[in-house]
Length: 104
Image 1 (spheres, helix red, strand yellow):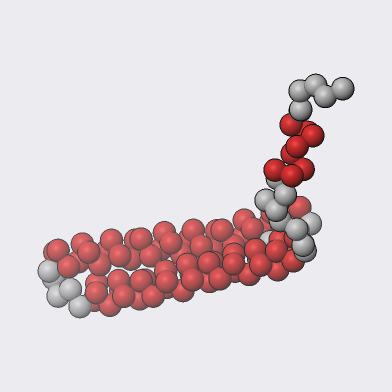
Image 2 (cartoon, one colour; image 1 turned 135 degrees about the vertical axis):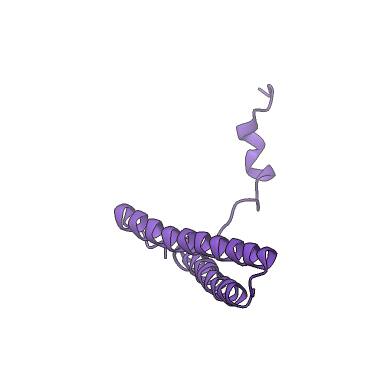
């Protein structure tokens, strides 16, 4: 009996090639931690660079209120970025330990 074709009867041909095939453990075990490490590294390095630039700008402002305000803002945002970067690293380490997965 022909009947009405149900999605399960034709899904195999429609979805072919859409799902990843291959070594998904390689992606989750190697690529994802690598990308996370690079992003955390860049976040921390850029925060330190901006902290240094803000400090230099602060010391060379020479009493200029506008320059001092910009330098304070740069230092503040650099410290916030540094705290977020280090905090993310710690959170990912703890989550990885609790879940038994190498996240970073």
